[in-house]
Image (cartoon, rainbow, N blue to C red; front, top):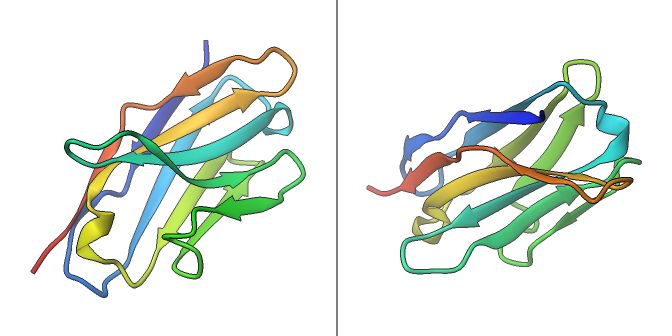
Length: 117
């Protein structure tokens, strides 16, 4: 059973930074594409950033140049560095793991990010 646990959310002022982390248990990163999604109140969940099994990264246009996704295959963690935060970045951020061999998808419980004065 894959378990994902996010941490690092909180309240930050506009222009500030946060670092989100996702700790994964019982699997090998080499088989998984890791993604961060977010969901704001009243909106659909949207893909924010992805990192493939080979380390290639992609970002939503709204966060490109401000957010950075990375992974540590030794510690089995994936992180999302959030810089130059805006009020519209306020959302619950979810970690997602996708197994490229089985098609299995797994979600963390989410961590709240609030950007406000």
